[in-house]
Image 1 (cartoon, rainbow, N blue to C red):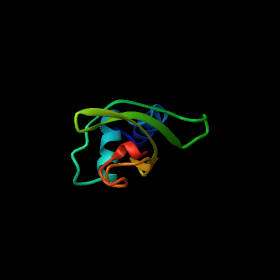
Image 2: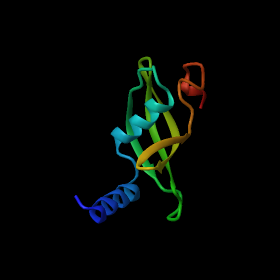
Image 3: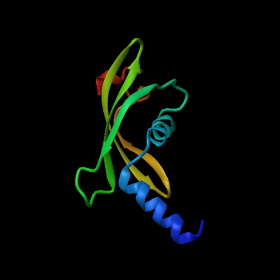
Image 4: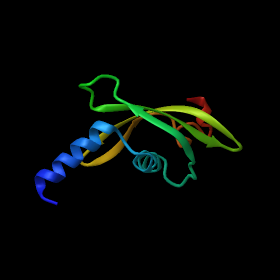
Length: 97
């Protein structure tokens, strides 16, 4: 793939927001060492000029699913967790978000 095609592919990916795999990678990087299971991940830009994406998702906590929100941004070709409670932040209880 040439450089122009690579840049175009990265730009298209940034417009679409993180995939579930990219979202989970960012979450696991933010909270290493925990078994984190997510579902129903949906990310949108709050406005067209924003560089951050607001994501809603559900995190499994024991036998239940807890609704959560997070903010991610694309930095140097990798999605980075900017804001949002994780089990690492909340004493293993993300429902405190």
